[in-house]
Image (tube, rainbow, N blue to C red; front, side, top):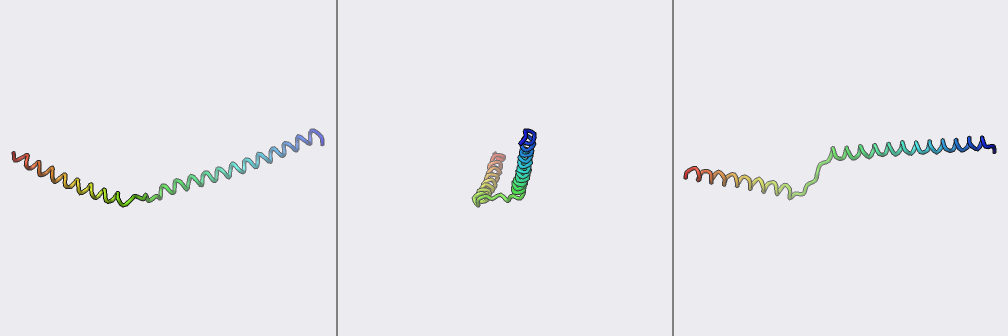
Length: 82
């Protein structure tokens, strides 16, 4: 095989390798885009889960705040009479 034919064959192989690499890179880019969309969609549609204790704690705090407001009104009323 002549030197020119060998160079031609090596260049053909190199171009085939570059083509394979490009195909793999394009596939990876597609998969990355799919993964990104899946993550964004999951977050956008997320219905966050919270333990039931959160609702109970919120109700207890609301009740406490109501009682504290009533106590403040009561103390304020006594104070204004003094």
